[in-house]
Length: 303
Image 1 (cartoon, rainbow, N blue to C red):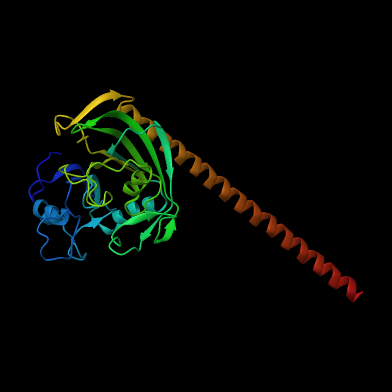
Image 2 (cartoon, rainbow, N blue to C red; image 1 turned 120 degrees about the horizontal axis):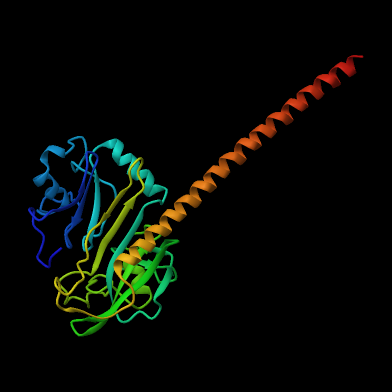
């Protein structure tokens, strides 16, 4: 990932199989668009590089398994057939997918680890209908529970101002969730023009990057990392000053935690099935007993 603007040619493939392609989406480029004037989208990049993989039965030619904001870069999964899209969709629907984002936040975040728990809803205020907001904000409609895990990686400065490099793990998938949650704790994402109300316009991009994507497909999981764009060799304005933990060790811990949760869900599902079967068995015995009893009562009444 570089600081150069996107182009049709600049598509980086992170993973490719017969069923999926994962690309490193560029910042400030839409995934797809119905607008004729949009000359650069991920859809058009894929069509340029892989015309033989496009599916004419779909509107855009490619099945995107999830979404990334226009301003967000990083790992984006594309299914190459309907069955593959269905398998990935079920993982997202069941919330078994693990995603983690790298970000630079304004100011120095005090708590090294924190769960951000703010319900997120649609902003209905005039001039802000393209934005989301947290519950309790004026004009916030239909807020839904939303949680994000925040882990501090490094403290430093960006263009002379204090910033914190963090790993963000969304536990739910609301629109603009990470941007809204970071703004809610007083540490908006560097370069987030929208949620700074146009004030943070000096960085060349919004500093939010989808670094990790794990989809627990069967029989083989899909696990991809999209590199770290927030390093001084890419953007010299970012100067790390104090490191708390390495990205590699943090991601490893996130993955281990996700696998543990998966096992717990599997055990709970198995126990639920056993209880269901046991209940059905007991119900069957009870019905049989009632039938025999009814026959006996009928015979007794006949006597």
